[in-house]
Length: 176
Ligand SMILES: C[S@@+](CC[C@H](N)C(=O)[O-])C[C@H]1O[C@@H](n2cnc3c(N)ncnc32)[C@H](O)[C@@H]1O
Image (cartoon, rainbow, N blue to C red):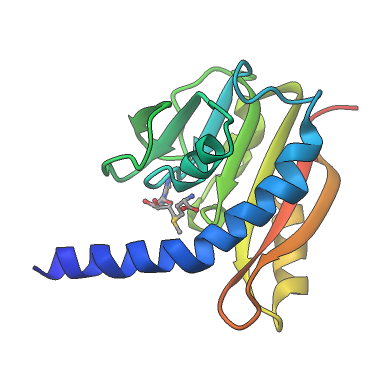
């Protein structure tokens, strides 16, 4: 009963706040990557994939993404197209440079070794990472997020609702 209740709260929250964030991420960051990243063909990894809500949003826009998703907790996926692996983003069972595009939304603060993301990213690959923030702390969060990686920053911005919850998003590239 408790779990069902928690699940409902999570689903309702997802429908409002997280949905708004993902819509903005797709419009501001994903669609402009057309020609550089092909979500249907490239090797894509989602670290802390959760239920795969982001992939669901992509699918709703007609982007038939194929993603490897890793998360410490196994839950039912909200959508198809995700090869799910139970595991930690701190020690990923992938060789160096295995992915062309790594995404990780609102999870990086839970990782002890975020540099793993950089390791599994192929040279020339892109990483799109977000972290929770609010109107008071976003500068701090921005600096912290950027300090975690030795990657080139290409684009950044805030998504979400200032009255509720926001995320700071940075698009990185590995290499020149
Ligand atoms: C706030 S949720 C975000 C889920 C999803 N990215 C989203 O935006 O809907 C954080 C997720 O990170 C996962 N997580 C926590 N620690 C992790 C770790 N060390 N490695 C991989 N995933 C982790 C949690 O299980 C949870 O699914």
